[in-house]
Length: 390
Image 1 (cartoon, rainbow, N blue to C red):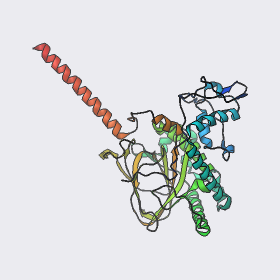
Image 2: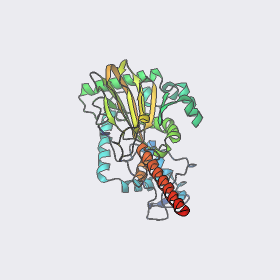
Image 3: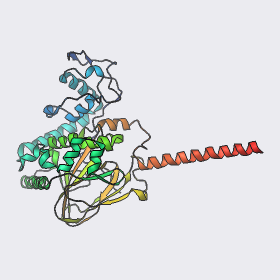
Image 4: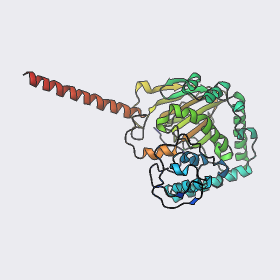
């Protein structure tokens, strides 16, 4: 069983949840970063605070703009209303302390690689590079997003197995445009002999959409369309604090990748949408959610699910939900993948030992411990009863 993950695999900039903050500020937004143990990040998010946008600073920042927006929710109360510049200085100071120099150098190299592509590649369909929700998504999906309720989301979804949600999402025209854009990019790669990074270590074909200009659109997709659903369905794995993504397409066929081995994703939440082309085979198979310790444990009968792709239809699941893809026996299949990540959840997970809120094997072990404890208690009571009666 292959459990390799992304070649893009980044150690997310880790966000300290209860560490010492280093800032000094007054309420009017004036101040300088300085040592102050009273300014600590909050353990719980300030849910009523509307965070600033840092998208306009994307080329200047060492970290994702969404990461700063997410981290801002955890700022101490007296930092919430200072200037954006001071908040940015405070958060950047924290992130740099928790991000190794080698990792920052790698990120900088990747930024230069990406900028070289964007500076030379000419997009075919520029309308894809900005979010146009009415032309991208089917009406039922947009209605559920606008309602933003548990009932609204469930009205468009089926849940064939616990934690796996499927729903109609993308317009056929959008799928065709994205397929055409990817083919145009691959022609440019072939003609210029530009060496590109593939989506991950398991797929030899496909392209990273973020690398040729679609990062902003995909960030919008995650923040405004995937996050609302993830807050409802995956809060226990960071669904409410998603702050970065890895967006790519994968290609399957007899002259492409044929199948995908059993694995878990380098994500907290995964969106998988079939873009189309005529094909047969290629079913997804799911085999239960697991933490790192239990990733190779046996599959229980109730965890088995096989799913057949339908163009435009999405599958949403936890990244730790073990899965793979069966062989595509004819034609060509192309899928859009969005790995959504939470740096907050990854930091918290370092200090946790019990993952029974989402790991199937942890849940079974916990139930077994409880069963044995109840049995031992009953036996002890029975012995005491026998002793008292004799």
